[in-house]
Amino acid sequence: MWCRFSSFRTDYNVSVVQIGNKNKNSPLSQPIETPFSFTANLQVATKVSVSGRVFRSLTVAFLVYMLIAHGSSLAAARADNFYYPPEWDPSQGSLNTFHGQHALRERARKLDQGILIIRFEMPYNIWCGGCNSMIAKGVRFNAEKKQVGNYYSTKIWSFTMKAACCRQEITIQTDPKNCEYVIISGAQKKTEDFDVEDAETFELPADEEKGKLADPFYRLEHQEEDLKKKKEAEPVLVRLQRMSDARHSDDYAINKSLRAKLRSQKKRVAEEEAASRKRGLGIRLLPASEQDAAAAAKVKFSSKFDKNRKDKRALINADSIFPGLSVSSMSGKRRQELESKRRKISASAASSLLAGGYKPSSWSQGAVLSSRQKGASMNARH
Image (tube, rainbow, N blue to C red; front, side, top):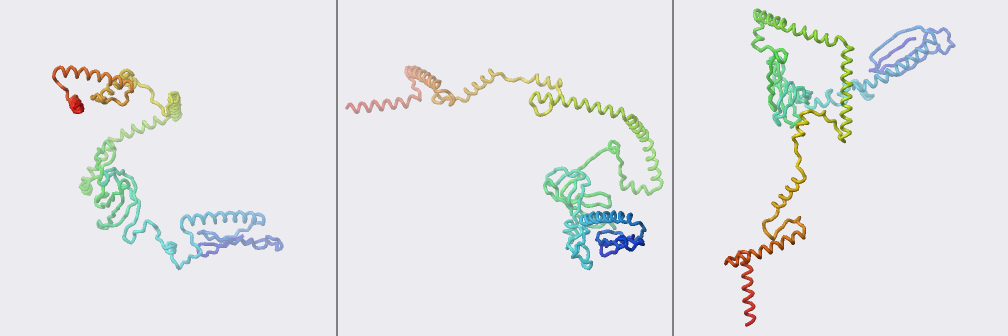
């Protein structure tokens, strides 16, 4: 059996033919050709002598394998955008030229201006210049990347993006001289001071110290300081390693303690949920404490008597001081009683005032009316 692979573009024609059978009348002596196309990057030419039965089984297995490989490779080619349509011709150039688009698609829409759209990750915490909100380190943006200068042979890149909080435009540039990012406009770097020893980090050497490291004597002193720090930190590291080894030496005991803690936690949660359902609540309540009991004991609720007294006092304050007006919520019978009492009080007060020779202002209009009535009656008699 031999397999022949002939290439045309990226497709290959395969023919499987049996050879070596001396019986010319046998159907196996006739060549078996199975042409089909598939996408591959392999060219093989081999000859294998086998019996007819083994050859048939191998042929079927080979055909099944190639069919599976043909389907999967085609799907992968479409997924990777390497599918060449039938109307494509090598003279037309690449697939991107054939489709009339750039390899970077939408990211290269401003490439004629020297701008490329990238994903920019914020290198440190900053304050937004538009709304003063903090933008954390690691937040990503769709930024416009372009070259704005050179530092010797190193390019200086500028990244322009818009904040998601207020659409403030932020511009950040690289600083090859100091090996950092510099905010040009739209934001302000958040100042964060910390102690190197407390943070357990390494302090980067300053520019002056970098220049001093070129001196062999200074470098030797620097190495001695590093060795001294290493010796001081070595006992701490050894102690931490011993604690870690002792903590994880008995896996069974650790697993047992964790499972016991989990069982007690599940039991406590079930009791709290049952107590909440008993009270008709949809949330779990915290366990009772002495502080909660003391705070609840200090709370005083007003009685019904105090409430009624306050309501009456408020009703009196809302009532008018003039006799003709009364509270709208007062009943009709009660209003009539109050009106009769007011008339009696007004009549007695009027008699006492007239006896003393004083006349209230409220009675002046009535007196004028009575004199006019008397004059009219006298004219009628005459």
